[in-house]
Image (tube, rainbow, N blue to C red):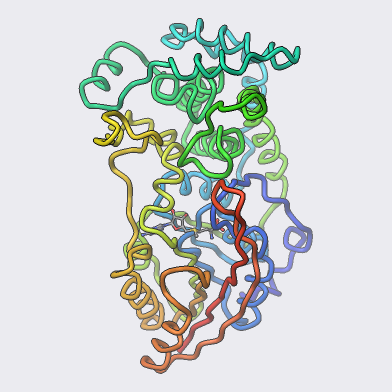
Length: 422
Ligand SMILES: C[S@@+](CC[C@H](N)C(=O)[O-])C[C@H]1O[C@@H](n2cnc3c(N)ncnc32)[C@H](O)[C@@H]1O
């Protein structure tokens, strides 16, 4: 069915995306223009594959426009967000919202988490100092620096698992990416989600992942956390750590729940969590399919910048990387087993693009690639490959300011959209 024939009530009104993420490379600012250009050039297709879907903004907006959507991303946190965003049966959320509204501090610190209550009382005294404008920031710095965390080596992990339950965030990350209370909330929420059936659990986890990207003690991503190093920075950090993650999750659950009344007649959605090559093998591509590809630009980009989100979803007590130079766990507390991508490796990026283009063209599908001019493959490469394979190629340009990944510098970047077909 053509898109305009699916123009029912749901598609004619703008549906706000209920689960946003602070996401590097997220296309929220240009998604409308991207989809407009795609539908203008490939006007006969109504199946949309978002192959590197990340925060899900493009897949979600494509679905709102009436495309049948398949969304894929290799990272577990992304697949969780995508599953929730694109599957809109959220009728089961009301009792969950009611139960979560009744959660108390005692429940948050129940079970093994009780062990961390004294740390929380200390944190609370700093929260109060900020409220009363009496903060001694060096005392908070001492408190943070003296936090004893799990080093992430195999022996310590085994001991931790044998003695405590549902304390991964408290034991690995308190006073780093999250405060004490926030870490207890995260452990509580992860345990809480586990008791619900799969569909409800996915929605709860997705709301938590979305909330984590806004509550984290960092500037934009989760590769480094902020440290107290002056009166002002410490006040800001403490204010961030006073934000309740449970409250933020409740807001998102309510937004999801209120979306469930919107029927999306006739559209379907599927989510994969695979490397793009395996996803392409599994999806039946044909002349009715548009593949949208927005790959990463750096080797370990997303697995490094969002490792804490993956650990939250997997809750697998990962071993952490060790920095020989400083003789301890790496400051960013990264997982040992991070996924790397060919698109971010100078030697492999071109062949990764060639394989992507060839798979789509061999199946007769249309391909739209988003890519930034600052990345490791230049725009000439796409034109040369299209000539070599006798393909049609059009290029659109969008101008964007990229944030300097936590630093004050901002860069003007040209974002390309290559539209490729037989
Ligand atoms: C530039 S981001 C996509 C952003 C997305 N379009 C949005 O607006 O949020 C690239 C995505 O590719 C994913 N990724 C990295 N390597 C991958 C691979 N080999 N296969 C599939 N996805 C991969 C990353 O997890 C990341 O979410």
